[in-house]
Length: 303
Length: 244
Image (tube, rainbow over all chains, first blue to last red; front, top):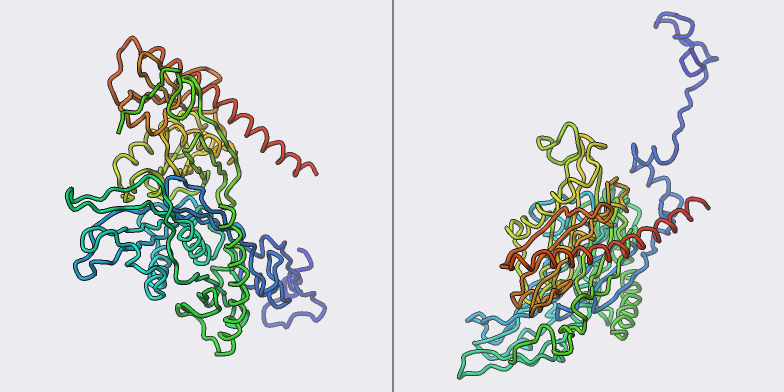
């Protein structure tokens, strides 16, 4: 028998006899990969208590963001956004449809976010996952309530023809924080959209569309999404990645527009947070949003 | 609107190519961090992304095979990828048929007996279509499978060819495909020169079949050069990082 077995067992004594004081405590050590697998929350806790995260970032550091526009020439507008390794592409196609009778001058914008099984092993083929549906829905509500687009700008002929913009956002590689990447790709793609001139001809009851795509969309604001994760109810992690996401006790998404104003805030349940925490997240989000807006501007200038 | 000439009097096609000319090919592997193997390929304006996961635990235990790996293919076309936006129907018959074709193409090439009771998933995402989506997807899948380290007996290289104005043409684009030119897609195993997949959906005169198949096979061989070069390039850089 080796040194790790208690003395009582080694000497073959019965259980009633107390163990000898000379028994050495068991030493149990693991390499970090195994530790990460069997006790991931403790693994992250060890890092966070030292003010650092497993990928080397400090708690308040966001991942590098990169935006490119115009990769999909078949779409009227397209953009690809990367946050670290999380890669999302958005393609916007404009079609012509009849407006609703209650709003004869209003066009439509239909965003949809998809997390296909291609982007991560955690998504299986089948109907859209809860995550993709909730992100889709939140983005849609933010777009509507912030009146990002003046829907009457999409009018071709009142009561007869309007533009409908289908914004399909697809995640190609999921390494955490799909919300921020999706929003960024969508806004970049919207800014990239160029619509052709469309004229309604009463005589033919049809719309003729020119070849050239020259008309940009007028966006009332530029919303930028900034997400934080909360670990153990106390550590605030900026831009959580895929290793951290399953172990977060709460998430907080803040949508900031270009002048620093608030467009949306989402804390879908999770551990309780104090007011000061929310305020400090808001400040951090503002700084990040300014940085992202700069990158966005740079990317659009390169079109 | 005047009818587009598929081949102009000077012998040029609508995109300026000669009849036997392949579109420009651009390919890269290891583009996605989550997938075991991934690749991105552009053939002209047709762009396809492939991700391979596996061999891994099968999702449907009932479907697992005791003596080989199960190959599962999902072929997905982005709704912004083509001229008209197609509402993506998950159970779209055409997409499932293409996925099934690709699955059967690779089933015979991948050494599935090496991994019994497991599953290899091939996910294809077409981002932009300018004709030739099927063969671009097959080429992307080949690259991604090699990137994932899945053993295969040979590369699978695919290409399309058609016949118009008494001339066989290689690698049709969207305009040519929609002009009702008979299009033949061929997937070839370059080492043996054998055809693993062949598809034709329109009428083609029997006399013309042989030259069109031959042309498509030549296209496949040309593509093999590009695929091989990409694989060697990425393997070289991988070897460099390992040997450091």
